[in-house]
Image (cartoon, rainbow, N blue to C red; front, side, top):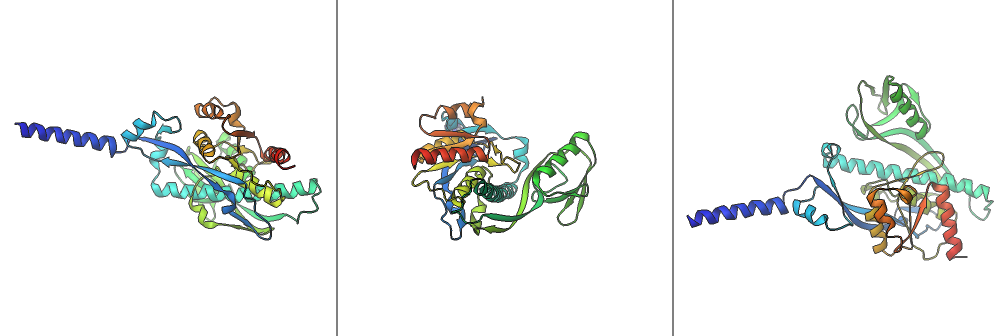
Length: 337
């Protein structure tokens, strides 16, 4: 009898341990990660690439165990959230594909924004000591990041209702107008396949570009496309601008996060994991942390907690690329001149 009772207790303990320490919950977590110097991504020919700028990453756990979930509730640096139906619909390979799509789009958008902005800045400020800056590129269309049906991740849409587009903003606005008026939507893919959207569908698209030529010549470390996410867009752009305009920031370390939107103002878009990224920046002893202006007044818990850390890191809020450049010049004048 005692042996049976002991056996029952051991089985119960085994199951309890398995549930707590092995079986995943339906929660996911984001923790502080690392900083990466942008000069490991870009290399300009015959031009020194700035080593002052750093992207900020987080570590994502797609399914934490019940014990990990319990521990996470006691650490403000960890963002714990329940997995959504959208999260559950994605396979691991889907997640990897999405990461590569968003990262490649982010890098190409950064390059285009940086070259176009720097060329204009050079002309307006008569910076004759700087070599000519130019870029040739082609907008190829939407690349599908997510769709509930009809489309697959990675599908490229070159036409909508037989209409072509020369830029992302125009194509996006046209699609939104069709959705609002509930008109027929006919997508043409890059392989010629045509898809008619007949019912309500959720889409997430990124811009797809082909960069043909840059002056000065730029090389991108393709291996780094394996890591996903668009949140380095703004700081990648700013790093390239500083390099192209030969802005010497000496030993300053400037981290940043936020997307670069391909609109007329190159708006800086919000991202996830802002609190975890702030802790990462502090841990790595950065001098400045540039973030989207959204977080200046946001009532999100993470944004509120982030602002409480402003005594440990100098946080700069920016709305668009021009404002980010103005803040960068302020930093230059404060520390270098």
